[in-house]
Each structure stands twice: as C-alpha cells, then as structure tokens.
Image 1: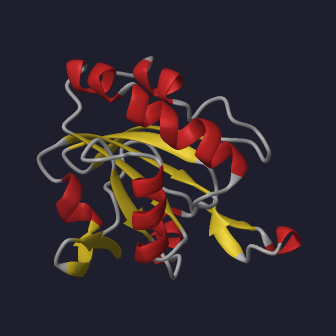
Image 2 (image 1 turned 90 degrees about the horizontal axis):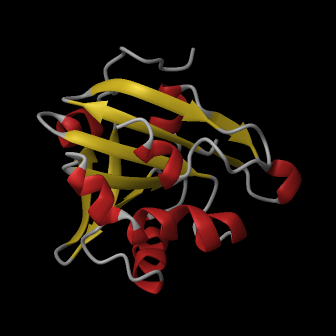
Length: 160
C-alpha cells in the first residue's frame, strides 16, 4: 500500500556518498524536525531526470529556501556512487542531497515502485515529489507513466 498524505516517512535506510565514504541514512531521521522536499525519479543520467527534474530543484533552490524548506533531497534506485557522480555532473553542490535506494527498499516501503524491465532498467521508483514536515508527508504527487508535470519544482513550489 502506498504511503499517503498524513503518514510518517518509513524508517528505512538508504545510502549517501560523502567525503568519508558511503554512509547509511535513516529516512525517518533525515526528515525529523525539518521541512523538506523529496523528489524521486526512475534513474540517474536518464533524459527527463537529467534535463528537467534534477536541474529544476537545483536552479530554484533559493525559492524553496524562501518558502521555509530546510532540506531538498533526490532519491533514485541507483547506487551511491552513481548518485554522487550524477550530482557532480549536474553541479548540485549542497543544494540537493543525493540519496541512493540501490535495493529499492525505501521505494517499496513507500509503495511507489515501477517495473522498468521493458526498458532494461529493472525495478525502479516512480517519479514523484513530496513535501515532508517533521517526518510527516504533507503532499505527495506521483506522475503518470511517461509524464513530468506534478513533480516539477514549480509544482512543488505551489504546494508550499
């Protein structure tokens, strides 16, 4: 069953590459005490994700901060090294925390997995964006397959 508005973020660990190596990140702890935006996408380095989704959140990071957002995070079913390399190639800096759900555990706990085997991608995350306040989902917008509308940074800014 998919997580819905009013639910708490699942206490599932994902990975993040840091200067000290790959570290575990407990998602419930990451969002505790913060107003945050989490957006998820099917894959690093893929066309829509690289050309529109991630760049929008980097470019409009200051607008999100002005609306009280403490943390912006990007999640994909990729490994931490891929997410780190993608973040570097997109000049993310400290604007977006790049999170790797390599085994898809958080994605399954959210109930937002998609079957990308027809594209040679295996099991991935659906494209979505959510606003989280102190670990509680305040808005959750999941894209229809092949679409990029409700999870854009502009759509999220309209929810804040």
